[in-house]
Image 1 (cartoon, rainbow, N blue to C red):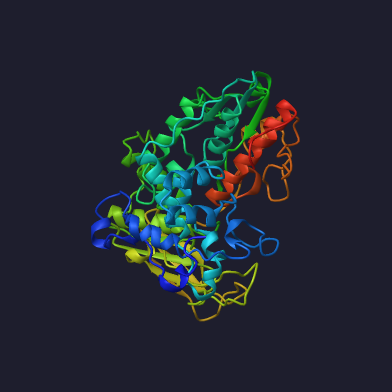
Image 2: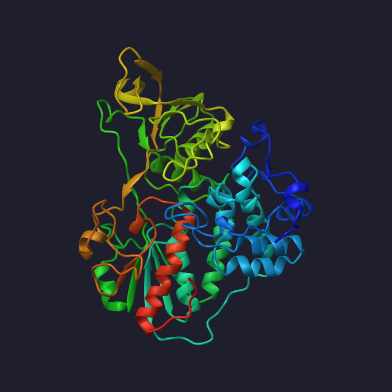
Amino acid sequence: MGKITGFLEIDRHDRKYTPVEERLKHYREFVIPLSEKDTREQAARCMNCGIPYCHGTGSVAPGTPGCPVNNQIPDFNDLVYQDNWEEASRNLHSTNNFPEFTGRICPAPCEASCTLNIDDNPVTIKTIECAIVDRAWDNGWLKPEIAPEKTGKKVAVIGSGPAGLAAAQQLARAGHDVHVYEKFAKAGGLLRYGIPDFKMEKHVIDRRVAQMEAEGVTFHYGAHVGGTSEGAIDPRELLDQYDAVALTGGAEAGRDLPIPGRDLDGIHFAMDFLPQQNRRVSSEPLGAVKDILAGGKHVVVIGGGDTGSDCIGTSFRQGAASVTQLEIMPAPPEHENKGVTWPNWPLKMRTSSSQAEGATREFAVLTQKFSGVDGKVQKLHCVKVDDKFKPLPGTEFELDAQLVLLAMGFVHPVHEGMLKTLGVDLDQRGNVRANLIDYKTSLPNVFSAGDMRRGQSLVVWAIREGRLCARAIDQYLMGSTTLPR
């Protein structure tokens, strides 16, 4: 694949970012794409491995990383190197409905699995993937794929995040009448309302939605299934109206920090903060909610993951005086130990683009209480912890904070409303119980996929599960299926 000696002749060269002082002035994407020549050269580095570990999870051993959607990475690398971009797009889309999403926001476990990563020089797979799909859109290659025949079956998909969108698109292409129910004003789930525009502009979602509408998918917005507001839909009615129902509503119950002072004003979940700014950027009304803004404030973000990074970048763009990020885990090593394998693999220090914009990062820190003045948060009272998360005496310290953002992940789907009304079984973690074979819940014609089934995870896993769930539904409705895995 690629050029046989490419990995020996060509150094790894990846996309760069515009300077911090420039990108902090706006909410647009700031990644600078590689030139066509550079992209083809990077594709030439793919080294014709005997076993391409990048292909899929479990290719080395059960549980090891790789590409969850099983992208045929060496194949599309070779096609790019050979300047056959349109065929590369066909290959890429045969396994991934939305490579423009993963090409922007996936953490690229494929690159971590690349054989060349043995010396920290993996093929720039994510960059090549993004270049392929962006070129496909620019050249008009991504036409609606309309089913030649309709099956007469109706399917409801509840939730329009990446799992719901992938399931809906696959089912529509199989000829079913697909209706997507979304409680918000636009489709995308956390892709639209959680991920900032500076990481993925929302026209990227809009063009896919337009493609899906042309393929026959009907979107119902402001349709809160199981909600209590005006216009809410009783999920039991959908069971009667549709031949199958897919629950793809994500895992939205945030992990809280129930310590003294939690009720002070100025302490918010990340998912109360981030969607507001996304709505401002897209000129979508905020409604009656109170503005949460970082301008002029000392901001503390509790949680060291991607959502925490998104809070950092958004806070700086709003004009925060300072941003400090706290992580309870110890600081990872600067360099990965290549001999360490799952579940500790790959463990090394990573710095996101948002963290590089000026955040202070503190590791092995536990927040013990909040304190404030006149009901508003002013300080965090913290302590250092050991590797078992036990406080270390004498290491107590305080941090100034007028805005605290809780970005500690999600525990499970929201149970109140749809799930309780339907009465579906939950697993021991509080997720909807459905197996990996047929994605069926405890109700006969109800299926589930994505974070609602597996818990908090990656966009690429949501796409994978949405595709597999669609295949299972098609099999259930028709007795057989030709949808790809």
